[in-house]
Image (cartoon, rainbow, N blue to C red; front, side, top):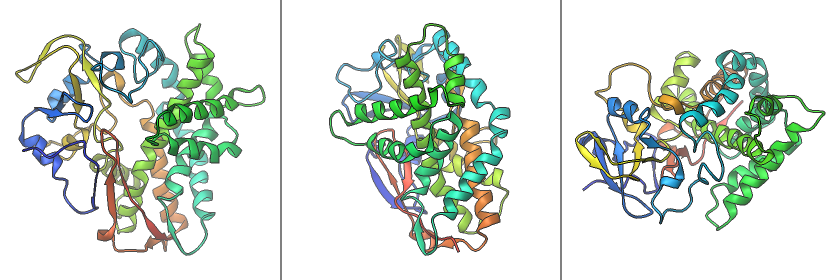
Length: 367
């Protein structure tokens, strides 16, 4: 019997994941029970995954989800976004975002991002510090607010709102989204300059103020969530003695510990056949990013950490630069930094559902 791929778990950082090998052994497309009831299908084979991620018959609009499902984003009709739209509408919206987050634009911010990492780490002071308690969240949020032109005195409010996004209380997530969208609007005032204003100017004519704020919310929350989850694993590996170049260290950390173990939910728009299995219309489909990335039989090549196809993560360049900056600053400015506990004693928690895995704590001595 398959272990539940959606069950929250905690295990040691060196303990093997029992879920991924079991899913791979079950076949390229595995039917599983979902937390919300009913079946979903998980893709475990890379070739099929890349086909699914580019197949127009498999869409991201939550309107296609089973009627009993809750907790998803609003539908594309209710709230168009990069994560709910497909086809031409998605292409148009992506064209507005992509120039702001291109490799060239992000590399031009390298010095600023390194400086932010340096200042935040320096301000942590002496003694044993849990970097998962503040730094892992504050660093990517500081970078995002700075780039978007949002005043940094709003950082604490952004941290609080991002943490409240995982609050199970009814209505808590909606309030957190509104709070992030409201603070994002501070980057649009006449005296500010930054990517928030550039995005406003790039968006298709007729985009509402509400939609603009939601796009900014999505950039902030997704950007924080992605890097936050990866920082702990990166620092733990580095301080355990990994001496490989920063680019390789970042790439390997993201391959083994992708910020999202699965893709966001996708749904078949019509009955289709995948890997010899007939799926009905409205069938929920996931790609097992972590399982495919870590498949021992996988050939070298680009991994699926940031997805593939039309929905390849628009912020991939920023996330990778942020992680390289942390590694570089630790090596150059904190050469005596070390883990305060043995590496093998660190523990990682999978939050359940399709959420990510992060270290429960990361005690470090910087000096």
